[in-house]
Image: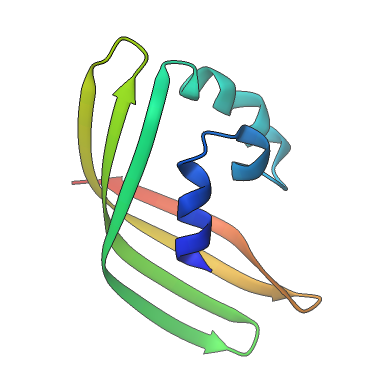
Length: 100
C-alpha cells in the first residue's frame, strides 16, 4: 500500500495525491507548479502493527526532483505514515516528514 501511494507522487497528479484532503488539493498546485518530474526510492522500512485497524510505517526516502527549468534536486529524509482501516479500506490518516 505504501509503495502504491508513493508511486502516485510520481504522477504529479494533485487529485490522486490528495484524494481525501481538500487543504492539500488547494496548496499542492503551487508546490508542484515548478516540478517537471518526481521519483522516490524507499529504504529501510519499519512497520509497526498496532492492532487490526492501525499500523505505522516509517522509512528513509531518497527523492529526485527535476524542475521545469531542468534543475535537478536530490532530497533525503524520513517519512512516517499512519494507516487506519476505515470501513474495510486502509487509508493514510497522518503523514510526517523530516529532512535529513
